[in-house]
Length: 126
Image 1 (cartoon, rainbow, N blue to C red):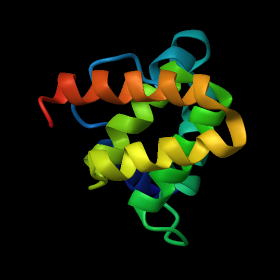
Image 2: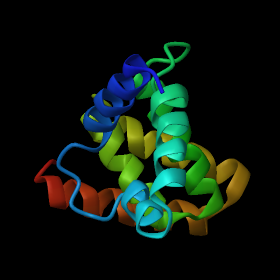
Image 3: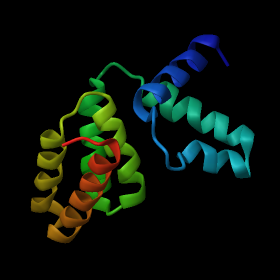
């Protein structure tokens, strides 16, 4: 493993998840298999999320949309947090969630908006 990849992984994880109080996937993976957790983290956070093809805010809005459509509210909480950390506004996140209605239906939108409201309350944001 290169030092550069390790540094990119750590910097991106800090950028996205700084201050998050819930369990992050890395901690869960590590509790079962530390070596695999490292490899997954290096790929997902160090190689995928740190790519410069999309700006971090755009990447997080795409992630919010996908997780909303799939109804993955636990993971959605983490990525709404990350979206706010990288500069997305609550309005942009809400609009992204509303956009999903057309393709995935209102029940997942309502779930996601509840998660957004909860994260905003937790962060003390408006």
